[in-house]
Length: 81
Length: 142
Image (cartoon, rainbow over all chains, first blue to last red; front, side, top):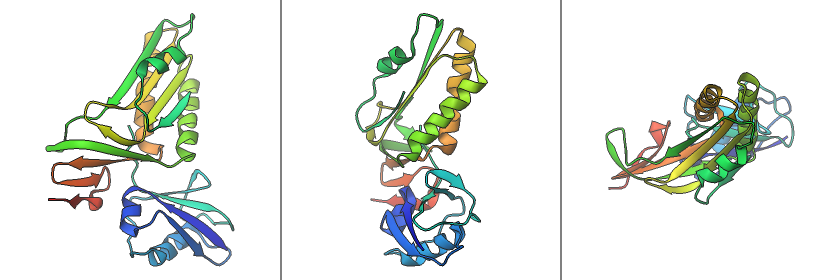
C-alpha cells in the first residue's frame, strides 16, 4: 500500500523534503512507515525522540495500523503561540 | 472564528467578533515576538502550520473551553510566515458574562495551543537559527 508522509519544521530540514511516499505491506504501522521514510528521503535522517504522528489529521500512536491512501504527518515538538 | 494567515493580525477585529450585549467581559490575549530568548538576541521568527489539521485542533480547543467555562464566544487567529520583533503572532479573544471565566478560558486555550496545535516557529537569532523545541535543528550562520 502507498502512504503519503508529510514532514514539518526541523524534520523537513533534516530530510531535505516535506513530502515522501512509501510503499509498505498491508498491516504496516506508523512505526514501520517512519522506518521506511528515514531511508527514502534525499538525506537520511533520524527521528527525534519526541515525535508525534497524525493520520488524516488526528493524532495516533506509533503502533496504529495504516491503510492504503492514508496521509501520515510526522510532527516534531509544536511551538505555536 | 478561526484564522490562520500570513497577514498582520488585528486584535480589535477578534474582540469585536466575540462581543455581544449579554457580555460583561471581553479578554484579548496577544502573543508577541520579543527581541530576546535564551540569552540571545532574536531577529525575527518564522511560523508554519499544518493545515487543515491546525484549524481542526483549534476548533477542538475552542469546544473544550466552551464546555469547561461559562463563556460566550471565542476567536483565535495565528499568523504564519515571517513575524518581526514587536509584531503579533497570536490573538485570542474570549467573551463572557463575567471576567473570571473569560480570563481562565483564554489562558487555558493558549496553554493547550502550545501543546497540541501543529504550528511551529523557527527563531532567527544573531548568528543562527533553530526550530523551537527541537534543539538538534540548530544551525549557525556566522
